[in-house]
Image (cartoon, helix red, strand yellow):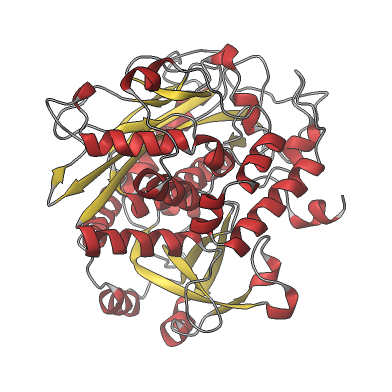
Length: 474
């Protein structure tokens, strides 16, 4: 007889519970009382894992004992000075408010039994949303769009990654040895019991159990590369799912003694990883990006959204490609989406217009890297598409044919963001300065010239890889 009796649910039961939780969140239901009661009744639950994301997009987790949380959930604090890009030591205490609608039940074979996930919102000492917490800023902006314009923003992503042999392959990386791939196959090519396919299957099972509403999964173009697709949803839930997608991938891989990596270009000479971001806006349940008579079946409002993104493409590039390594991916030799134009067919365009009908009409922003802070990235894309400056009128022909390019290195991207009054306005002067300082510090720790070889420093000092001990020893 086991001494432990922690909650372990079947994948079928997990999917049912998590889809119900997702539906409540989509309807905007107040879930606090419901989940507090459920946690109190569920005797086999031991802890609640509260998730939040720092300014650059690294996931942080705090495990609270369930009994403590039930008594103290409305007065949780943490040391913000220990999180890069948050508060200074002199003003370190920040509040952690639980967003109860985001609660999900966890697969115990991946994360251990007796826990549930929930996302937190970072609050300043006075109880207001902390300016560097982009989950809170995105949530507030989406709520204002629903209230003022009855808009709902829908997003689906196609997030690619690589699978490497060995645990902690990124932390142990050296440019001399590179990464050790688990598979030499290519697009769609993997035997059913290959290591890559076993990983994808286990990943997909856990993802389905978390209520992602899976669509398809497969090896990608590059060897040892993967992509798992799932249904579009509300923009905030979509951002949460990006964080859970990467967390799931990393933990499933680690359980198999491998490493799942979301570096945009971990290996020179083969295709990198992107996170194509498909976006549409609905009003009253109707997709207002669709117009059967419009160019490529897009409405005038959707084309205005595209034109605003193209006008500000250089300004927002650093929020969508936030690392030294990301600019290796924007290499035209590998179908890179680095041209500031839109096209229904040309995959080197920053924005593609996929075939769509009244339900699926959307714009696909292809330049997004998988190592972004999704809350910051989606917030920037939505606000730019709806509010961005129209410094020039872009004709239908110019959208397809002009040959402006996104910056080819992080130094140029930093300079362009610094010059952007619009980015400073929507991010806030202090937060924009914090973000830029993090990117300058990262760039300073790496060789300035990218060259043909992936450098040790651009991996070890990457914001999703490094720990603060390594960072402080530079």
